Length: 221
Image 1: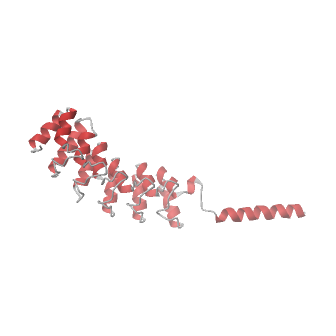
Image 2 (image 1 turned 90 degrees about the horizontal axis):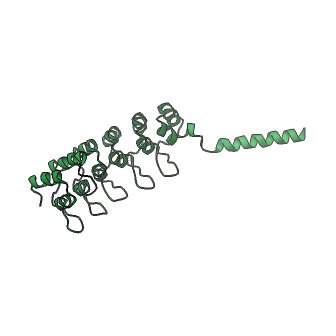
Image 3 (image 1 turned 120 degrees about the horizontal axis):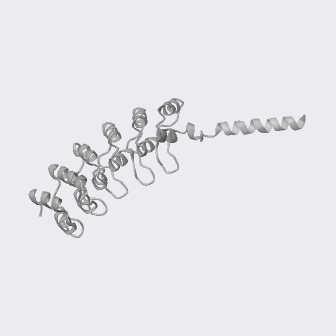
């Protein structure tokens, strides 16, 4: 009998201890729910008091996780609940920056409508426009160019969005589209890299004839 009571006491103590721990099961975790796009669980956890900007081991918020997975409705629910669109993870990605860099255009629009910091930079020191151009997302570029973002921002590599569009592309239709957008937006065509090489000189060196023609027609040197 004494042994039975002791075992019961141990089980009760363990249950009380576990009850005090934060919820760790994936089904009850806000970041995991956001990754799955599980809107019902997101709403339930927030209603139960889960911090909307709680982070995982990599420093990602639920909103950043939803952005990674392109879970638009999950992102919308989190933003409406007050999630920070500028909260950065351990590698300096934020929902806004990642959405731009990876062409998550619907989430990008949501972040811009809810306080996206246009001056915020990624780990390379670039504003959101630069990786959108580099990675080849014309619609994301179009959206960003409709804002007050700095089209001539220079990152830690000494490159602008225009330079990355030329240097880090294959000169194909996608980046030609982006180049046209940057020219139309008034990007500085002659802003050179740290070695003094202009976008036009890079385009000529890489044999990108269509880019060369666009830049020359626009008056680049």
